[in-house]
Length: 372
Ligand SMILES: [Mn+2]
Image (cartoon, rainbow, N blue to C red):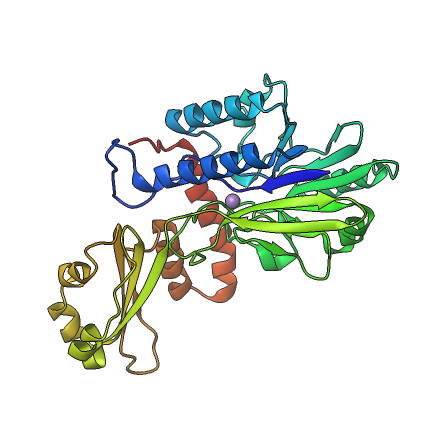
């Protein structure tokens, strides 16, 4: 039995003010391209099942373009006649009961099986059962759903668990309403053949478990994600489990540092190569306030003119042990605001406010229009 496991495709995500020749935000187009690459691979591999572990869309109410793209791609998948099982992640789960889940639009596809109702759903075939646990807001309900999953494990067939969560606190994405899988229920993993995870954006096996994997995202949803490797998993289940990770081609991110203590020399010795259309991040270190005025952002950007985008971090020389990092351009407003509150408040107060702030920003994101 062969499966393709991919995840966190975040269709509709957009970032940076770069518009491509088709009039589409270039980063948004990159996410569509990554998705298509996986679909091309699926066509070639012809697995028995395809699974997607959440965050198909970046928002609970995606843009028209993101929905249109997804429907076109699902038409291609449908024609392959391969069952496609998909769960909702935190990004595609509405935060209020007022809005209808977007994944509902796939219910009319014959080969697509979706699980999005914040409850356990068993999706059964002749040879395998997919135990799906989509994103859930309510932790106590989640526990009862995990128990339901446990009761439904049938050893006469293959059993595959699908979840969108952080297994332990290690895989938290610092997002609103994340679901942490309870540690004392991890023993369940050894009772099934494979555990397919979504939420964490890097590929990897989880802890001591031999059969528990994050597929990772197919693109980076923030410049803070420096991974240049994104891809999908091919799972082969015969006598034993074989997991192979395959990379897709994404826009690379390249990191440079210019030491302003010796600015001229540092600029001269930069090895600027292979940056065509790349995302470049330049860190100016040991800056003095005076230099910061002299060194123009434009001059730095000119050093990397072939890049798609250059973000500049200014790190000032530390005077009295006080860390100052001015990176307004690369930070989201949410992160910037959180940093500000952190500086201004006591740790306990900050923890209390953090949840509220993340909640407000995500509520705003949900209603704000992401079309250009
Ligand atoms: Mn995600």
